Length: 311
Length: 320
Image (cartoon, rainbow over all chains, first blue to last red):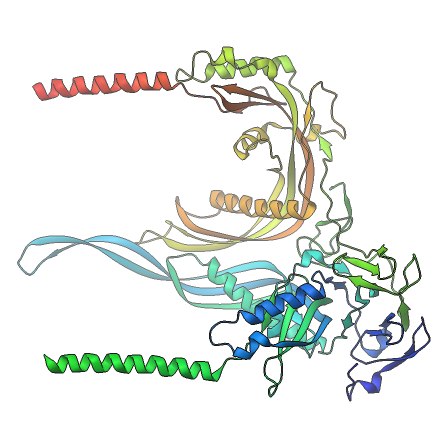
């Protein structure tokens, strides 16, 4: 078990109920495994410490061996420019972590204003340079301003509540199938590493709100009539906010591809099996490719110039 | 009232059914029925079978004991296969349905095979209950479209609006046996107020059952709400006489769904190896729908005669 400086302050000493051994539960964790008898204990802290009880949880569906095999396959197929060490990378610290996140939903109403272009085909008569009467088809466009309102439910916006997993990393392995939600029961954490939410709820709410506004913008783009539109401006109001703490299953891998470099983190969605991670590129491969490309271009330019010079 | 409803969503007033963890419309969390203890608690999970410690197993989707393999279960979102709540009774007796079908077959027209009435066995007309949902809802629909109203020199002008719509007893077919065309023909002829809690006893009747789970049914109904909203907006709210690029965004309140079994008489018959079917509404003998074969001979004959006539006319004209 890793220890953290700030964690020990609020860490909890408990006694393993199975064998009586003394166990320390770090402040950011909800579970602990007894090293002597492999019993799993789950800690439910009182709400007075400012901790929030999760509402729902999603269960792991991908087992450890399947997750490991999938990540190994994934590392081997990272494309031409990936660091060559990835193919032989060793997977260190494979962990199934139950990560806290907020599930957010609102009724969103937007007032929007845009300019719409409507095309129309018209036949135009004209006299050409030789004095003949001619006609031609031309597309005419007309621009009009229109304002309107748009309302809908925005549900199932997920944002991370863990300092350890940034939102962008979580988004990379989304979506989760939320039909599989279960009401939180401490039992579902048994045997997994479970984190307490480490980001403040208000900050997460703001992040989810921002994501909602951005989604509304995308939906509004699709909602617009006309052949085309421009200058779409919208103001979005939300009401009836829902924000619930949920626990998400993630497999976290550290892949060491180079003994001299820190390992790269790969996440696997413990429910759907989606994989994401920041792939290290090989500077040597890129340099070779760039040099090769440049020399081909130079050779072609030279050949072209000398051919012109000869003629 | 939806029979299976246990309470209503605090936010959008849609009924919540047993096993729902969240509202299907607006995602509001359904409060847990059991209160939670808020004391510092350390739990050790032990297998009920042998007393060993247990872990949540991804493969078994439950808590499993490594020593004796027994399984413990967690509260899971239940997603039952739906069942009929109400049965609309047959009001058309079998003989009347026979007569209606015979009349329909004879009305089909001259292009049908002459021996169709004789070879289609009307005795094979069987009573059947097909399944459908109906929904009631209040929907605030935001819409946007191009219409010819106020279009000036171009063909189209953009329009948008928001309108509150009420839907009552809008049928949505859940039948796999009947096609959507057939169910749309039949649906307006039923009087849902006559529905009973049990089917009539009828000899040889076929009972179709709902075969989708609740979550799939809800998706289907939401799609239908959107389609119905679009239709209503197109009929009544877009100005002008023609339109395009119609977009709708429904904001639902109080969506209630009911599950019905609806009566019909069905006759499936083969003609020259092809399967055809005719359906008579079980509550109105005036509604008969279905498919029937065409007679290729007759069509060719008419086409031949028409061609010959055309040629003759052309010759007369050219000769002048």
